[in-house]
Length: 385
Ligand code: FES
Ligand SMILES: [Fe+2]
Image (cartoon, rainbow, N blue to C red):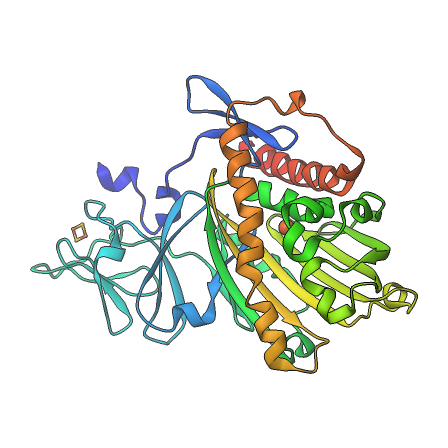
């Protein structure tokens, strides 16, 4: 009977279904069959590539991560490729990550069953016959440059979707770089929203990259829809250098600053930005004395916990040691953002988003919310059919 209920090879279908979550303007209504509550941020879009980690993290050993509420175990299989398996043994459910890695296969730490990178069981202690349902769901994985991406939705659709492009080009990799990962106790969309409204620089990053709040209040922001999401150009002309940078630019020198941000749905933002002396056409030419390219990949762990991967390159400083030193300050700056989004998460639980007020600077952020809402609603409608 059990074999009919769980048909062979359909390990994917054994992943537990989560609660119902309906998006609604930067928050979502969640119900588990009973009470419905408002929760901050966005529900998940399943048919998408999410950044699972940097290649260097998967050099050896096992890494356990929760992505979109699903426990996943990463390791190098016998062919040296990164494998991602559901982190739950099909026997009686022990996390496979508590087991051991043996020649590119994982041995469950409870009763010793062995699973290869494909999810197939290759050994059951004391038993010759291996039932076909003794397999673990294997997530599609794709790697480009130093980034390992995981497909969280219907595996049959993965091949039709390209990886998010964030200019992983030769230029990026030839510049001094910094890769980081921070975990945060907030919904992924709260951080995406943070990145889509840069007026926060004046307050959240007052001591680091912010500068004079009055300069940020008169920014020029030009948002536009793109095929993959929403992009904007932000221009600041004749502004003060932030305190930390007065040594570099001179206390009295005025700067022009530009930023191009693109939200690539559902969880990536790519950034290009530059600063240079005012009036030197740095905005028009997308140049500057400071020039940064950056990937922000915000991978949801749960509805209220996320991974923030940031990978930045400095393309302007001829002194590479100094560039690396500057980039190494990034975690401190990002922790300033995380302190706010985590506090928002706590304060927004149960809050109807219609009770919040929108202001002038919200346009790109609201366009992003609308774009993500629409994609999630479309996916939910397609899945319901
Ligand atoms: S739970 Fe894994 S072998 Fe028993
Ligand atoms: Fe920030």
